[in-house]
Length: 218
Image (cartoon, rainbow, N blue to C red):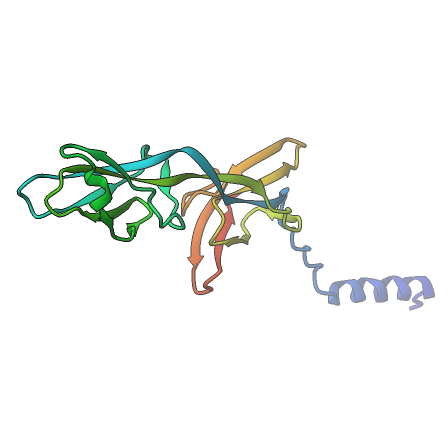
């Protein structure tokens, strides 16, 4: 019986194909849902002098110890005392006698804090009212954004880290989503920035930085 060359070649090809393992499917790359940058906000305190001085008064009464101490506090909740103003600018008001103010001696201004100071006076048996005045200042904050971090991609199911300065007063993710939408996600404490960006953990070992880890859910 004759077997043609063509038949032999066909049989060989069939045998070769049967011996090959089935082709493996290529893994599907994670879906990119967007790309983001981290922007942090800092606050710089600025001192603003205030024209109105803080004042405190006390009276030296006849027959008393001849001593009194004035308590000086700021005139408003948003003001503090200027702790470099240690003179106090005492003023004397005569309550009795011809010229009792010439007998007054004052001690130094003593600051318990930038919200409270005292100054003591003595005038013997002379009746006077002493008032001490101290400069004040107001602290205001200048808010500014730091330069944006390098851009990184958000991939469904993967983790990413946000490095935040401990001195920052705020931080946010500014993202361009896959559909072109521009989104802003505030980073607040250990909460989830969005339903699809879930907080995982916080590393506080560095004295200057916090490392926040998030997972992209879809």
